[in-house]
Length: 303
Ligand code: HMG
Ligand code: MG
Image 1: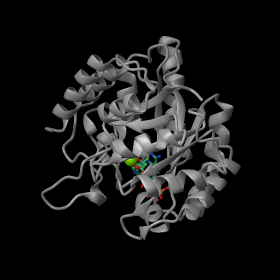
Image 2: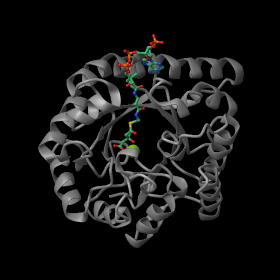
Image 3: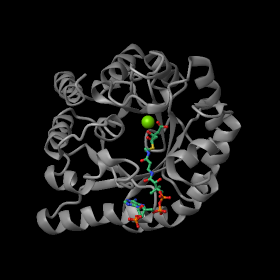
Image 4: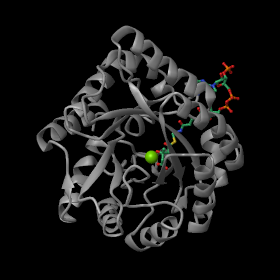
């Protein structure tokens, strides 16, 4: 089993998507550049979603135009909910090939949920309808040479439906694999996992996907209860070798926030790195560069 752990920093996307105040594209570009100096495997730069649903990320195309191509060893990715989103991502690549001879986006990420209510609230579609939308997205992304990550949200609990069973998660994972998704990413959207619930979930998922293959499986933890570091450790013990994290811990989930108190966000990249070291594994990141990026990220949201 690999002794290194793959890290995707999602701060520019998950970290910023719910920020109410408009953040200038130039500041986001600075954040991506600071992250690109960290040696991270992947940076989730933005989302090509409806600007009415997520106004903060309405500048995705402008952001890609404002940043250099990723350094060797790092890739850029972006969320796409449907073909319209994929078209926008492909247009970014077409433009960048023309202007600088390089492709910016190597992976697109589709997203659905293990909870019907969350799927409706997040994408205005049933789980089955999201899968129908993904079929042409995945086919066309592959034809364009892009890898496809498929997120499943609410894998432990849903803010509207409560606890979610591993069986419900597996049904969605099966559907996504049947469509040809290259990578499954399980999201603990509201940070409800503890070590035991996570172990149970991973044991179930391992029947469908190689959870130890960092190209095939990723875990996406939110740190709402402050135990995402312990959960990451438990997941590494179970064999997981790829995680999402957010520099500076940005990304408080609106569904987990209460009036006057924003919920803690994604597991911070710094916390994840500590868990990786505690697990006796190797984080391939530059700690000083990561600290700079984390401080800058927190400054962007006034944190
Ligand atoms: P809809 O309103 O049902 O879409 O939204 P529609 O197809 O009926 O179109 C309505 C309008 O949206 C049209 O514009 C479309 O052109 C436009 P109009 O004609 O009215 O001017 N539109 C788009 N515009 C830009 N880009 C697009 C796009 N698609 C349609 N791609 C839709 C459906 C999926 C678009 C919407 O619900 C949406 O954008 N949702 C995004 C929600 C989102 O980004 N959530 C956060 C990401 S998921 C997450 O955070 C969880 C994760 O972190 C893991 C975890 O923690 O669990 C990944
Ligand atoms: Mg998330």
